[in-house]
Length: 72
Image (cartoon, rainbow, N blue to C red; front, top):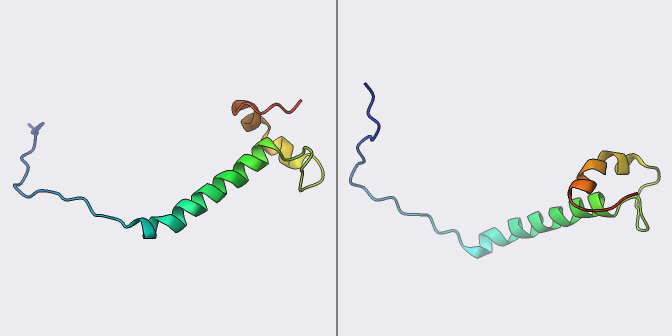
C-alpha cells in the first residue's frame, strides 16, 4: 500500500526574494497588454476604431457582452 503522508525531511524551504526592480518591467508589460485587450474588447469598432470593417467586432463580440460592454 502507498503512504498517504510521506515523511518530510528536516530541511526548511525558504522563499526566494525577487526585487521589485526586476518585476517592474513585467508588471508594466502586463498592464499595457491588459489595456490593449480591454480597448479591443470594449471600444474597437466604435467612435475610436483603428480598423475599418466589422472583423474585430465579430472576433470579440461574445467577450464584449461577457464583460458588460454594450455593442448593439
